[in-house]
Image (cartoon, rainbow, N blue to C red; front, side, top):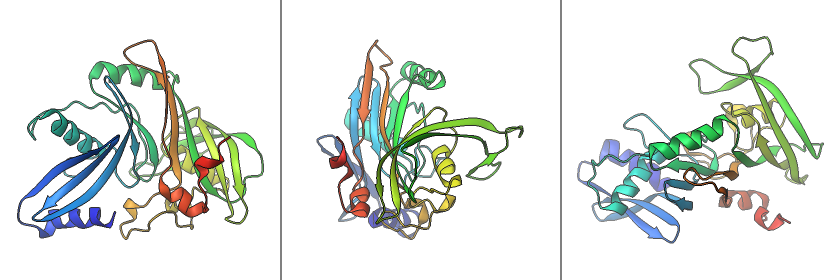
Length: 283
């Protein structure tokens, strides 16, 4: 991960020679490399967890934007380059990649992409009609007392800032927001709780804000009040992870009448923090 930052700095400011992008395919994983002179450096590892027709689902790594303005690295850019390489197309070839939903930069897990506009529209329609079931695994600071519950608030996106806030129901910009949670396990020795969360609504930073407002910030999420480090502590805070993982997604395949269910394995920083593998706790 350090090399990723190093190469970006080198590319933008220090390196004046030629840089090549290449890919290595390891089963369902794609490793993206910059070749700089004689150096061969991994800058991103993406795991394909589902690929069928126009539907692609990536296990998103932390620290990378899903989409970004020109000149800023993003997951969309990397996947487009992957398809150009895979299909033998030139570097300037136009690649369509629809993005029917979003996932925060520091979060990980299921991220859906569509290879053509018709599939993107049909998946987006499912999100709008709340036909898609998404479940998140979250580690929060503190011990959540109830085994399950619902959290309901009115949330607004703060204008001009990358954050949201809870407002009263009378606020003109407030949008009704609801999530359901189940406690998967409590860790008193770590003073944290493992939650499974299902969203009824999909507001900006909804999980991060609603957990934090109740005194249970997501681990590593300093933007919403966490003072507990989670994962590798990069100097550039934008590359740091938080303990928010899009665990699974259930939806209808956009090109046929079939329900599909996709699950994303946890990143290694969960096991490192807890001292055990949460995947092995599933009954």
